[in-house]
Length: 292
Ligand code: HXC
Ligand code: NAP
Image 1 (spheres, protein in one colour):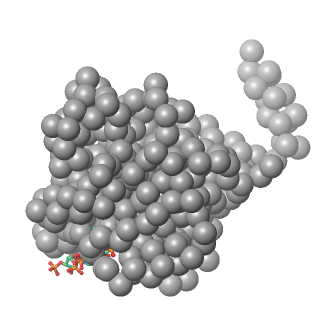
Image 2 (cartoon, protein in one colour):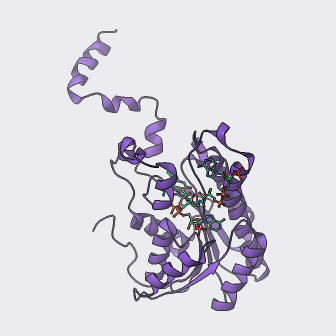
Image 3 (cartoon, protein in one colour):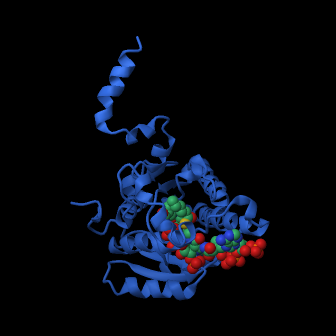
């Protein structure tokens, strides 16, 4: 087997109805595709209905076991989120999972940002995840649902912070804090909350805004990753399917990093010794031993 293979093979999600925000593109689309293969009913939502319809059409021709419904919804509006939830309930009768995946981001020195630019990112990422989580949580609690899961896509800089993407870092840190807080508060309502922190997984949306032009070639991102490669969409989809399934029923309030060791490489005090050729170690050891 390979890491690009599907982990579950049967209809492990056939009882699930999952809403994927930002499900029309990139990682949201890849996760949606896999959930459908596993028999889930999936609602994909974002601002651009055309994109959602194209994706829904493409994925429904693939003869998956599941069913897909595109619903327009700007997660920044609580009213639109409530409508999207109602549309989901009208169509499928229930909802069991919420995947907060929608995001906005671009690189910029922070002092170049207008107040509105900063707000735009905070509103999509933090307020959007809050709107969806609050609307779905209220519904689940009122309906006395016996099982529900929220999965939030954050980043590794949710806890390290990162220069040049400050609004995104601040917003994702908020989403992570919300994940951990509600995991405790809402466990009594049988609602689990977890997060995934992906490292680099190439998508058009992220790459065009974070590595524009020839920066993709200039900054070889694989050099930042100890495993020497970027992520494969299927390995993220495998993790997401697991966290939304009952196989992970005892995992609550966790953030799982899937980055090939990237953030730790940047963090460890002496990790720069990776650059020292093997042949130097005899000499270095002799120098150190001589310092008695
Ligand atoms: C400075 C900018 C800017 C830029 C926009 N703005 N782009 N400021 N540099 N490059 C400013 C605008 O001038 C405006 O402020 C404000 O931001 C809002 O811009 P709009 O275009 O009106 O906003 P909107 O149409 O809502 O679009 C939102 C967006 C856009 C975030 C700007 O890029 C988008 O739709 N993104 C969605 C997809 C996305 O970002 N995917 C990447 C996710 S990757 P003023 O003051 O002029 O009105 C990710 C993590 C990756 O999240 C981690 C990798 C390891
Ligand atoms: P992407 O394709 O650009 O996905 C972002 C999605 O969010 C788009 O489908 C977009 O659709 C939607 N969206 C943006 N604003 C919205 C709004 N106001 N309301 C509803 N939907 C909105 O990028 P991606 O790389 O797949 O990112 C997916 C997730 O992974 C994000 O949370 C991102 O932070 C995270 N992530 C990605 C990477 C990576 O390497 N790719 C690494 C770490 C974390 P519309 O434009 O139609 O609204």
